[in-house]
Image (cartoon, rainbow, N blue to C red; front, side, top):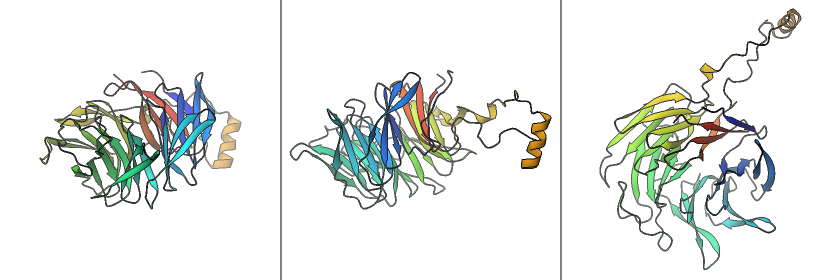
Length: 367
């Protein structure tokens, strides 16, 4: 596999990141603003800054077709940014929530976007032409805690959520006048707004940090705080699923996951390196690690002089001069977001990660 493409942008946490469709622009959430970087040679240079939020920006997403940027923040607001001759123009979205907004994603057809929140609601936002503003409808029941992640079905109507009440759920976000009636799926046929098409629990009661629909939309994966990844295969509306496959691991919990193919998932989180899972309805397994710290070569080229050895013994009480303050992985702290970078749905060749260490890294997937 090609070597990872590593970019240390700054020494502060990156809450979320998003690339434009042509991968020439990168948006990262840094404190209470969003920074836009442009591709420059092998690196990225700061191009612009979107400063419209009062508190920490928790999520950002670039629409692949229109190029609009949506951001949400702990200030309980969401903003849609559109390019204009004078720069990026923000439009406030009426979320009507009284707690922090936690996660935002555009629907595949870009007619809507969804915002998760700490107010135990999901705001499904759409543009109202008559009044020239963005309005929202709330998915409420049966959410009982903070919504941590969202994922859209390919039909732009079904919406999956993972929340701190240890549940992954699939809702219908059908809005009359905005959405066309979707084709029947294994999740349901008639789908009025706020229909719960699936509800799945983490057996350990762990927060569900991330959810993702498969490229076909016929399966749902979610990662929970007990270091597990679960894949659900629905059968028919109001029927038990064909299969619910859970893979438990011995590593730290995953915070984000995505599908690269219909039979492959990449997850990453507190262990600071991505893990690849492979399988199907009959079973899933932990396949291999990307940027595996156990295989990282120890740098033996630096030989310590006698003087340096005695200096280390005097300063640290030991003669070992190797640097044990850094991890053997590329990311030096938790990976917070994992995103497709190159390749279409079901055929992702490369993916990008961002983390608490201020790095954005582009990894390749073994095909």
